[in-house]
Image 1 (cartoon, rainbow, N blue to C red):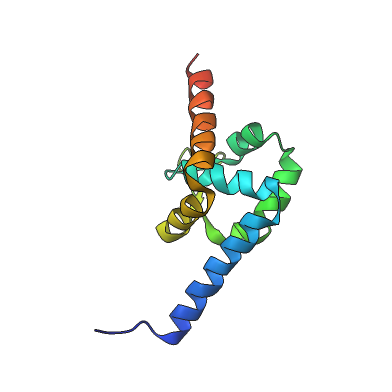
Image 2 (cartoon, one colour; image 1 turned 30 degrees about the vertical axis):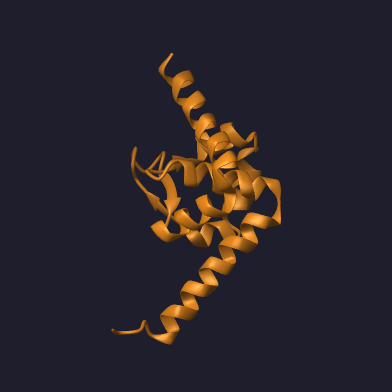
Length: 120
């Protein structure tokens, strides 16, 4: 069985350490990570701002920090409204595990409420 190169292991370890550091930094980071983890297909900055109650400039500051290094941007709804999601499924899985079922249920419920609001 082949072992992953040590450089790849180190990068992976650094990324997971970054996720844990960001997740435990403060409630704002936790909310952003939880909402992104609750929506694997991606979430827009506008929806993140609404759901977290963060002003757009504050959310942008959060996303440009450690969280941003864990994300990728897809032009899901077009370049004006890109979707943010974890760059690797392992990051999402780890975030879900660390947040636990109770918190993930809260974040998923927030997305469902937003979805119902949007359809009305």
